[in-house]
Image (cartoon, rainbow, N blue to C red; front, side, top):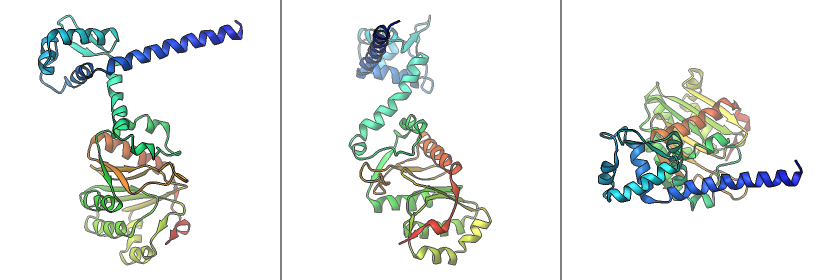
Length: 291
């Protein structure tokens, strides 16, 4: 086959793929069709199952209207109907509905992501799961962020506190020490980058608190990476994440944070922290910058 014929074949194949994708997006552009998909996605946790009349009643629309949209969704391969007239998501439909959270998270925060990125060091497997962050609260202002960590992440922890930050404000050091002292069973793991900025009072503060004894006992563990762009702070139930800006060297924006107690959000943050923990280096005090 000549190169021109090959290019023509590839072009036709690409066009078919685009047309197929366009059709799915068109079907998802309907509020009612989306509502049907979400109802079917949640039906296992709700009472009963959905047939035509029950869907019409739940959506408060006519049966004719629902019937028309059900047929469209079946033609698109998103849902199926059994012999008893009960509708359910296909494997394709279930997978598609689980991706909608990604579009929702990005669209609701499109202004934020017009000036922020996911960071060059963030692996694609985490970006592909970004929809897990959808159920969250956006906290703005450095003071509000630090208070959130102190009053919720630190104070309410009972098992562990994990942190991965580009720099350590003195407030956080002062807040975590009494927490570790009061509850010896709490695990405190943190990751800092080389050349992380730390306050000059830190060394004396840690010494007076007997911090190195906590390290010897394994209560505190520290690791180091070359650079941190995506920052994480979490306990066993709550998590926060912040992303870098598009300006300059892509430094972490610590003036705002996404926060949630949602299990999927927490799982994403915990997985991201663990991935960096297991790919980090030994902690080296000499590489910190006191300011």
